Length: 409
Image 1 (cartoon, rainbow, N blue to C red):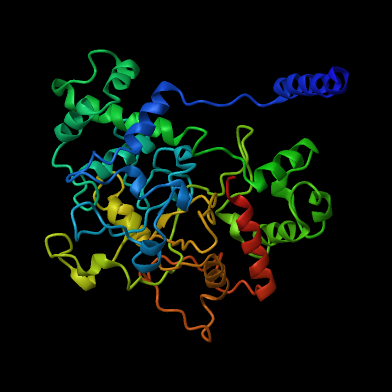
Image 2 (image 1 turned 45 degrees about the horizontal axis):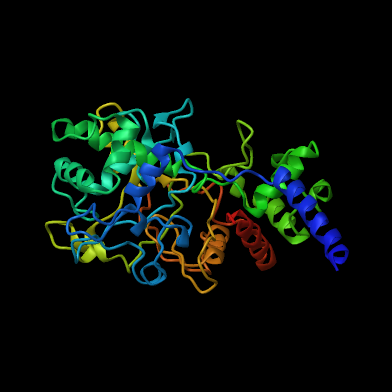
């Protein structure tokens, strides 16, 4: 009897050793990333308590709006102090840390920064992502803290206060250093948002990209003529066809770039700003906010980057030509959702709740027979790369199919 079971157990032991040697080691967060994660998910850091960064940026919605009902009904999320609402939908926090500081390039395009209007420039502390993290705590439409000191006091009372001191020094967490602690909390959040948890690069497309690069092929060079070389590398033939259309006829890759740098897969953004002619979203509750919050009421118009540039001394002369432009988002996790019936919202104001409708809008925006609602901002509309792409219904579906491969596992 012993001999009967000895061989299987020996084989099992050998296989266990072999697999343990080849298994990818489990990744863990650094202490700074772990601190940032604790702050990111801490619902005590609002007034009243109950709202964290993750309230608007959670994995369930692709690190964007995690509430299906809100995405469907209003797109903009309520703040902790009801009935206040934000004026835009939450963008994804995933892969956001790659954006450079805001600057104007040689062609006159603004590049980088964070928030959809670029106001987290990176000019203040050198990191747009950390500056973005500093905003919601004191925003009366979001976490509604009255002052930086209130955040510091809450962190001093948190169970992760010792970790904060471990990361930034034993004397770091002090009411005598309010500005410094406030910045360090944001720096820790940015560290977490740059961690592998939000930037795993493990989508179906990423698997395909690595196999393609290993074969000596450049994904950015794919065309209708050479696409057979890219098949059987992790994507279905239909998904490859969708990628070809994404790159060519659909003109998507003009802004959502397919090329890559530093050995990483594509980020699917060029970090610039654009006015796509998106209609106003009548579901946005910001229009009905108290005059203290929105003095213009129903006449309020979101002017995007141009409105922010108007507040700067250096770039205010470029404000008019950037009215209505918003940050080109990464398309990574654009279809990531916790369940098939989960509703996502898209564009700066959440006007769209269907990925297919967006591609169809790009395809037919300027066709008079389609009768899309007028653009929220009619100045500076991009009429070169969308509006009448002449995609068939099947081609629209194929592009959407490809976009679904960008969701992380």
